[in-house]
Length: 147
Ligand code: HEM
Image (cartoon, rainbow, N blue to C red; front, top):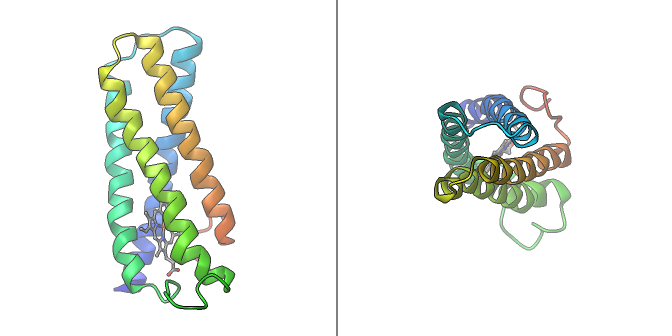
């Protein structure tokens, strides 16, 4: 079960990253060239949110079965255990909140340029956080499952 979940979680990262890069790029182009916020833009933020929430669910289960997640006196002393127990989950949770807000909070905005701007700021921040967290793991951004 652990190995299957790790492969699923690891593989889902590519879908999340791909959708996130598309959303960031499309919102930037929309912002800079004053394009209207179309149905496709809205759908993209929805797919990104679905992929990210699926990643969250798998991550939550992994959290309880991973041998690298440990609670105890040594949790903060061991950098690997600290990363998987505290840092990874915390940084990724913030990124997931930003991605969720990129979809939910834009619904209330009427102006298209302001929508693109909101989506760009929130999703670009999430992208930076996710890349940072994956780099911090030392397992590589595009390396499929740890060595
Ligand atoms: C966008 C969100 C996330 C992304 C992109 C992501 C990405 C990754 C990646 C690339 C790995 C390494 C897989 C490997 O070694 O091949 C991993 C492992 C892991 N993630 Fe996430 N993650 C996300 C969210 C979360 C969340 C929210 C949690 C917990 C609540 C979580 C818990 C874990 C755990 C426990 C591991 C496994 C450590 C191990 O046993 O090797 N992840 N994640």
